[in-house]
Image 1: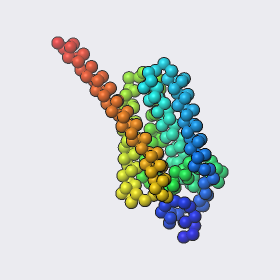
Image 2: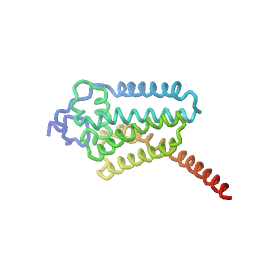
Image 3: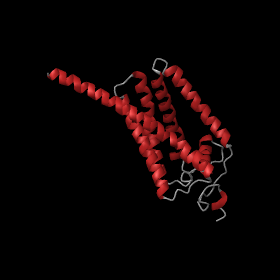
Image 4: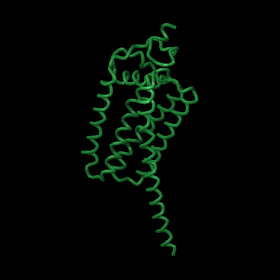
Length: 220
């Protein structure tokens, strides 16, 4: 019982044998993440998207940011089942030790979380980077691809939140971590995919309507 309570997570009886306490501060973790994200966004905005409209550049920045987040951060979580034992101060392990204060299902290797994150990292991550390329090159499949990824992200968030609710929704150390990590950090992957889905749906409908009109004119 003493060993089970040696970690900071809830529930307190969660068994994490060999747990090594986090060494980086929350501010340090956020600073590295925000700095890396800013670098990616700046690179995409000024180099890859310099000839595109502002909205397309914003979308390219989003897809690059979320794609790398899926592949690197979430990919590490999926393929590192014992990250809580890391004693090397590996940044990625520190991220998940910290985030688990908002949702201990990560440290506890909850099967639903692993499934959602696995699909996100392996399928949606590379698809996001493909979306960057599709927008940059003006590919015909760009809107369909963006809609598919956004719907996948929304589905993943629904599964993530619903399974937590069904299991009692008691996985955060306190209300600060609950609202800042569990709600706040994930909220962007609900709001932005919703907006992108709406835009892509309208674009696809407009395109289909245009084709239909041309066909009707030819028949006449």
